[in-house]
Image (cartoon, rainbow, N blue to C red):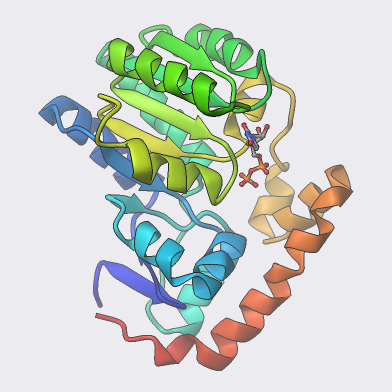
Length: 247
Ligand code: UDP
């Protein structure tokens, strides 16, 4: 089978966390610029199913991994299985370990004021070889956005985490990746909140049994409406998933 699986039009790479982080470090060591990494879960694939332009944007990225057990199940239903999920946060952690080994640079962009700075402190404590070259929060008007872009350009990071939630972060990366002088840009949602210690990841029990969504719902009941897309995603994949060609 191919190295990608087509899930409702989104062509997800069949890579695990190790392979994805290896590729990221390879881009950095090669001196590539403007590479993009997105990690769609079922909700994001539903967004792409409804919005062709967003679907094309995801498909134009350099690495697109399955963040969530729902996407792994879907790949089995369409008979082109991915064997494990490669969640954005896990890829970020593994990439930081490797970035630390090569003394690479990191810029943190997103989340509420102060979160990126705290995340930066925790990251340098855990991955001492990583040099944080800038932090910006994710709440901006046009003028502030220009300043953020200039700061990123000046700091020329090896790796840029963009944590604005989906689809804002993917659209932002796609629009700016060729002008910001970052080698690799990763859209990784609420990860800065986790690095900062403000939000806990679901315990392994939940991820292992495919019920991470239940943990997140209990912690943040406001997610209820967007989570209605999870059963919709399941039905769509069962009813229509096999009509999408696998290469
Ligand atoms: N966020 C931001 N700017 C915005 C909207 C959201 O920086 O305009 C941040 C928000 O503070 C949070 C992250 O984006 O840290 C999104 O988190 P969420 O858990 O919703 O992301 P997911 O991974 O589920 O897409």
